[in-house]
Length: 114
Length: 112
Image (cartoon, rainbow over the protein chains, first blue to last red):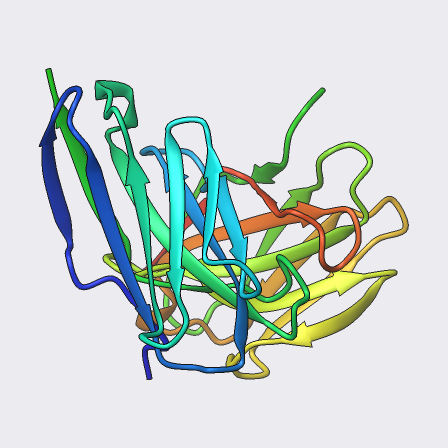
């Protein structure tokens, strides 16, 4: 039972354009959502998060949007840079406990070309 | 300041054997979580250790066990290895059980 789903295995974007990565979840108990970025041979690195009491959170070029009624969140990267090329994982946790017991999606590989 | 370190980097075992993976948390962190990442999948939560006790556990059989030492480092033990245990094993450390998790580079386990 995949509770967090990333239906796009890959995404290609040109440098300077917007990258939009999507994530859906099924468990209504989830109330904290995170995005991680992973380069080859490295562990996932925390990027940005959002609590269920908000619908948007921004950090520089990265913005996460949460639509609770649709159980959907998205990560916007603008402008995209070649260094953003990596695998992006969406993750969720329940009980408003922040980073505790993360449930991950299967990842989306982003390729930003110059 | 060293981040999360894991050893070994790679490991090859045969079915039925036992394996021990090690993790040293980031300086100042007291909580260690372990995840299994199979090929093409996202990391799956195995368990979390805090104050030398297992605080939470994911949907993994008892063949998976762990330990946390007084210096906060941790071990993951897997008994009676199966082919399906082949995966990247990630350790994450945090300050407290709800703190931001910092991941190590992982140990790649191959079971033949």
